[in-house]
Length: 297
Image 1 (tube, rainbow, N blue to C red):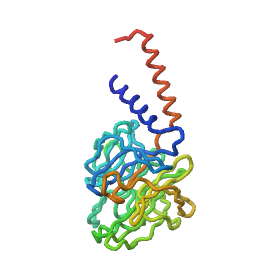
Image 2: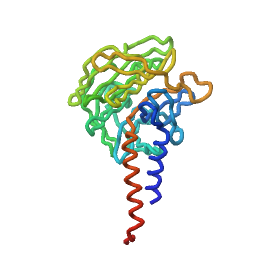
Image 3: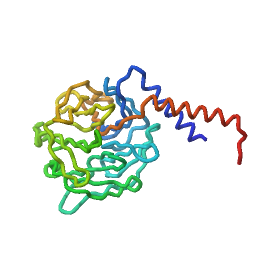
Image 4: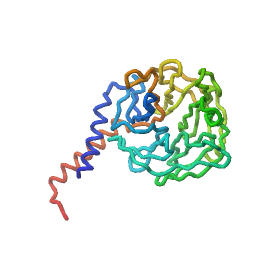
C-alpha cells in the first residue's frame, strides 16, 4: 500500500512540475563535467529548464529509453552496466553488465541506446550495433554500422558525440569527433539511418555538432547539443537531410563555476499530462471504491 501511494504521489509531483503553458517536457540524464557525476530529471524543450529528480548519481549515464515495469533504462558511463531508473524517484539499480565485442578492439565500451518496437538497441565505441536483454543486460551483436569509431580509442585527447534514437518507426544515429586540445573537428557531424536487421548505417546528411541526445515528441525530433565553444542548445532535427534549427539554450551549469559543464546525454518522452490525469483519476476512483467494499483476506 505504501508503494502504491508513493507511485501516485510521484505522478502528482511530475504533473505539478509541468504547467499547462509549458512546452514539451522529456526525461533526461546528464553528465556534470565539474565532478563527473550524473543527474536524472526532466528538461523543458521550450525553455531549456532542467528539473532534477532524485539524488545526484556517483557516475554519469548515457542514453535513456523506456524499460520494463514503467521504469527507464540507461547505461553507466564508467562501468558500462545497463541500469534501471524509477522515473518518480530517480532511484537507480543495476540490471546487469552490457558486454561488448572485445576481439581486436582495445578500449571498447558501450556508447548509446535506443528502443524500437519493444527492442532495445545499443552501440559501442567501434560502431557495432547490438540488441540488449532488458532483464539481464546481456548483448547480442547485430552487425557493424560503418559509423566511425570513437577517436578516443586511438587518441585520448579526442572525444566524440553520438546519439542513437528512433523516430517514425526507424532507427537513426548522429556522430561527430572532436580534438579537445584545439577544438578541431576530427569527424564531421553526420546523421545516419540504421538498418536494425543488419546494423548497416546509411548517411543521410550533415548535421549539428555536439548532439548527445535526440528524442521525438509529437512528431518533432529534438536534439540536445553540447556547446564546445558556446551555449548548450535545443534544436529541431530534419530527418530528411540532417538540418537543424535552433530553438533555445538549455541550462549549462547547475553547479557554480562550471561553464558548459552540464551535458544532457540521453532523453526519453514523458507520459502525456492527460494520460497522467486519467491514470490518477482512475486510481482515485478505485481507492474510493475500496472504502465501500469490505476487505477480504
